[in-house]
Length: 135
Ligand SMILES: [Zn+2]
Image 1 (tube, rainbow, N blue to C red):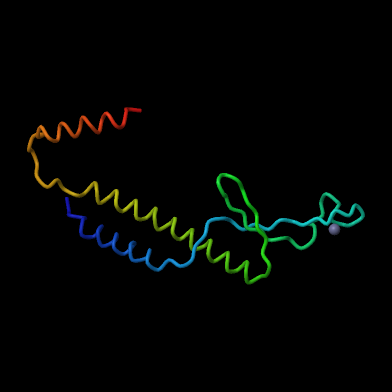
Image 2 (image 1 turned 90 degrees about the vertical axis):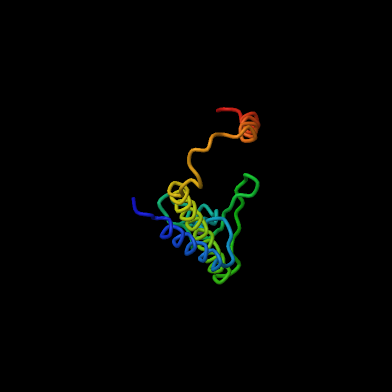
């Protein structure tokens, strides 16, 4: 089997370098909500009407509740959009980092093969089993 470790480790450092390029980021998502003025005689009161200019809103979860914010200006919206894009980049990078690390763990050879458990290790193992009960 070819030794893939150097290649995988290079890939990992490349991903880690990209983390340092992340800028301002925030969670949330932006959506456009059709606005209805509420006047019964207005065209927007008809069911098939697209409504008035859509209102752009940022929604995000705060302590389990969804909070909505609207934007004071197009530039506030563009700023938030790029911050959210940056957050998505972070998520993608973390997923890549985890994936490459899992491959590295699988390919990393043991430092030494065949030495039996020492009494000290057995004790530690028993302690850790008590801490995390089997699911
Ligand atoms: Zn209206």
